Image 1 (spheres, rainbow, N blue to C red):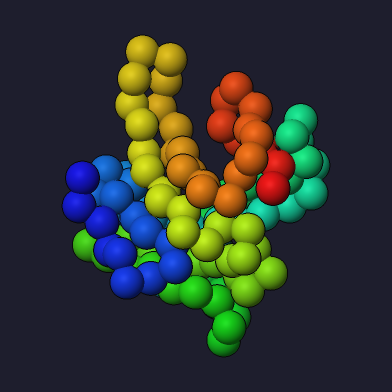
Image 2: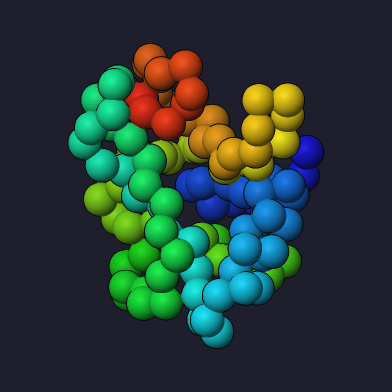
Amino acid sequence: MSEVSELPVSLTDKAARRIARVLSREAPGAALRISVEGGGCSGFQYKYDIVTAREADDLVLARDGAIVLIDPVSLPYMEGSQIDFVDDLIGQSFQIRNPNAVASCGCGVSFSV
């Protein structure tokens, strides 16, 4: 799996292709914002939003037509993570492999640090 590794969060080829496909159906300048919020069964959860507004201090992951934004409050919780897209028998989903998570729920949506 190829990825952009010099940034604090990386994006796999599969994730980049899927994000680019999703964004191609959105308004020009759209991006996928991934943030970390309190909640979920393990303490924190990932939130995914399609947005057109960017903040000056967002981390911007841009690759092959995919644009991902991560705010500076969420970044410490995601540092070192890899964003992937999985298509298996259970279904399709974005998965974040987070080395900071000490526990996560079965579906991978929430985690604790």
